[in-house]
Image (cartoon, rainbow, N blue to C red; front, side):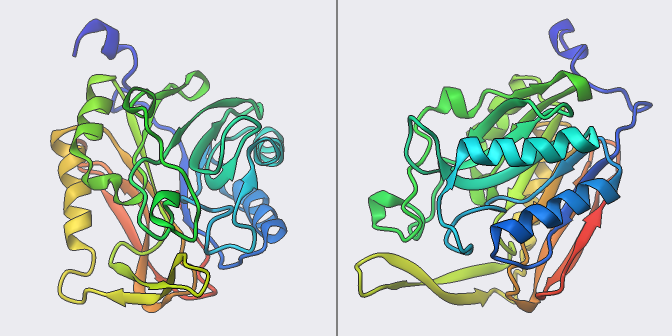
Length: 278
């Protein structure tokens, strides 16, 4: 690797304890914060990775969260446990409308940066009259700029959910020298939402189907390929269960085809699912 990248990459001898998860099913923001605080504490990890849309969104009680409030509340958890925390939420800031965010907070609780999703499904996209009423990221330059976490020695890229198929983004993160990719997923990779047009004219979700023949294999194969041939680094996966049912498997764990350390756990998407993977 060029000298400018060599200093950013961990050697195989260096190890850092990272926690991924399939959180306990709840739609209540207060209970989610309580779960996260307890999970971060119990993990004793240097970095804790929560799923996409852990807060806010159409699957939660509160659809749009205040960004400043989220950073403050989760920042308190990060600081108390001296742990870097990555978490996803659907929300808005003082200057911008609601978007799909994934934010990173340092071990001292300070905000390090974020990425915002550009590949929105119809039921989320405000332009498609989606129930989520979210705006997409429109700047590829901003979307492809990594977040640097100096305290953890990490240069991080975020691949939201089905952005896993956005080839240009993988390449951009590779050239930017990322040594860790975070892959926060909204729900089971084998689950496909059944859309409906509601009486208010908005497109929502009325249920979920599963492709039993594929069962998420195409999605997982894309992650394995990206780790081995495109970004050459670990990919941390966290996913919501949402109580979709036992036939829907949520994922958490690590994909690291370079060092042969891939370890993905399939967690049934039942209401009591509550798995933290180190």
